[in-house]
Image 1 (cartoon, rainbow, N blue to C red):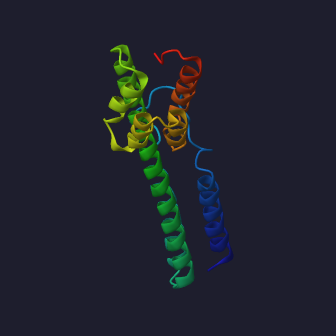
Image 2 (image 1 turned 120 degrees about the vertical axis):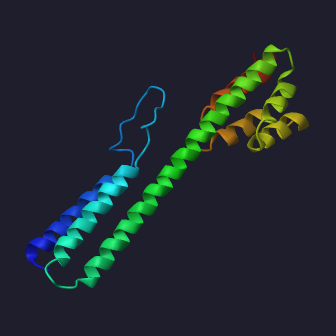
Image 3 (image 1 turned 90 degrees about the vertical axis):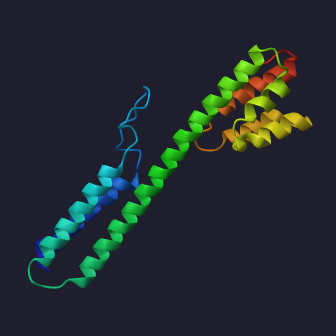
Length: 179
């Protein structure tokens, strides 16, 4: 491997590592509704993988077999792809949970507008998804519903439930309805 080849491989690796070490830093954060392109990072994986493979191909085109460089490059690409796929899966889970929270709030609001007591309304609204079973159980058994909602609201994507927990706590302390 010539001196310039080594420098080129190191520069590409450093650039890819820097770009991927802080995933949210280089991503545009839209405040509007999500569209088909928001949160997609798979092209970054393809570009990074292509750059590393191109550099390794250029280094190996010299006729020398640089097995160590190839092994390091492939392991780096594999690590980057695994990290990006993990981030992508987490983002997908977060978006799915955000939609579930919106559905829960809509159902809870509809049940309260229908005139049901807050505990029964929460129990019925939580029957839509099994992941809300702990909330329905807390309401049914007279437990600390606000704390149960806060606990579920600590999961990625369910942050909106923190406001529901605060509203529930205010309604319980003041004796007013939750509507």
